[in-house]
Image 1: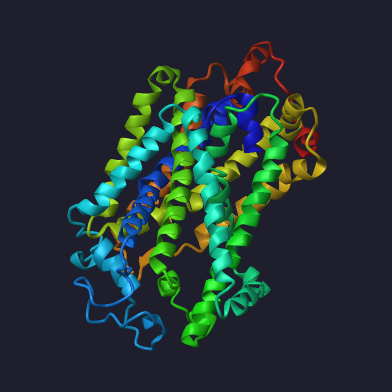
Image 2: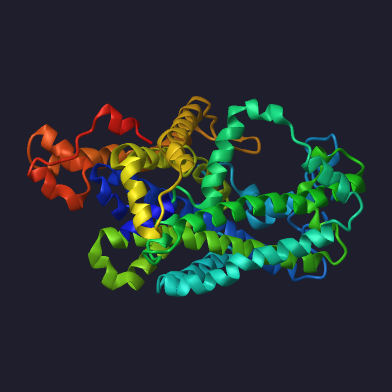
Length: 488
């Protein structure tokens, strides 16, 4: 749906809603969500860069407890296998005490100043992002050749190494053993729906933004099938890599698979520094690739909506990436992990499900599946089959509505380890989440206020494509009947 929507209308996430003006608010919703995610996602890439630099050493600094940052609770590689809950692994202590300096913060109300090492890594990430995006798809398209293919090379290398380790087969057998009773847990479905939005870029405006640069006759149906298939197969393939190492760790420490210290698998391999460098290069390319998509969604969405920005793309891109850098500085302070956790919990959880729900309703029930199918036929020469029309009109909206309701009903406040966030922090988080969702009703009210005529005339203008507003003026607006709404 999003690929066809962007390709046909040649606009970003907000501009495409000229097909049904009252829903333009959802365009701003997904743009805001992408911007919010950029505030903390770039920090993950900065962490990976920090780890990459640290990997260029004879011995990885997170394999033992003999460092200045270690506490008395540090207890060696297999610390998480011990019954003493106070013991910690050197890998965890390296992350929290060396990278984050979490010991110097008492909570989210005691952040401190940005750490210069992480700030430097974050600055490098921002510079790379800017020069990958400043010329639009001319530059980002070339960068993607590296960032999109490198992870597959690394995953394949890691799999070949992983399956040769003792215990790997046991791990893979555990991976292929499915507990179907978990499907009764609503939280599993919510996390799955949110994850598929993240991995495919659905609901972030990414697909709309990139497809708007396609040729009008590009086979977006083929692209959708290939992209979603590769996405699922990649996830399935990655599982073999992960569980081969988990099986190895399980046998090495003689413990159950679910008790394995997952944060130290690579550190136990011969030549661990080389494997760590390879692994963190993969994380960097994955991170840059995803961050580019999110930023392009924001930039294209706003530039297409506010045409005067077209002439100043390079300057506007600089403004966006510098803004995300400044906000991200809160995440690289001593207590930055608390800000990071809050953003991660609220920025794109329920709000992303809400965004795609409104998208589905706007396209299927207001613009109309019939008309949308005609648009697709105009581009690729064939109409989508009955399956797709049924999904767009009934299956997806119902499923997403259920997910949104359950997400609100089963809300759990964020936690980091044993730290509980204060009430005011949760309120800030909800304000962040609602600030994107509220764009839908705010824009709808604004649109009704500025449209001319009676209430019925305003409604007609609001749900009729802008290219057909002259029909509204002549009283020839489409008539919505029960049959029209139910036709698939």
